[in-house]
Image (tube, rainbow, N blue to C red):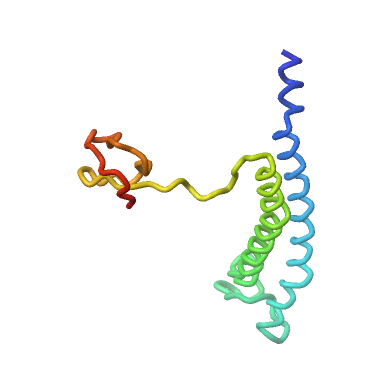
Length: 144
């Protein structure tokens, strides 16, 4: 039982995922600091004056509980886009290159399919001779 657990932990995929999560956490902290220190002040300044933020006060003036803060939402969108770009360029692209060297295709395009003329199923492999749903013979080379 312990040997199986040890083999699971020492598999290459688990280690790659763990390293990826650690790197993602570090980038997340960095990007959060960037949005809090740079983006949020810019958004607050866009409203001008001594504004609390870019938003609408729904209740009593000065009550932060009834302030709809669009600036924080815009900041969260910017944070998400930057974070996903960092993950894509720092993790996904290198992983695709490493996997390609091993002969594996990851994050690739789905295989081409064709549509059955009888039942209109659109997920048949291009080389299929019969529809897996209705059993109709398929014309060869008819990609949809």
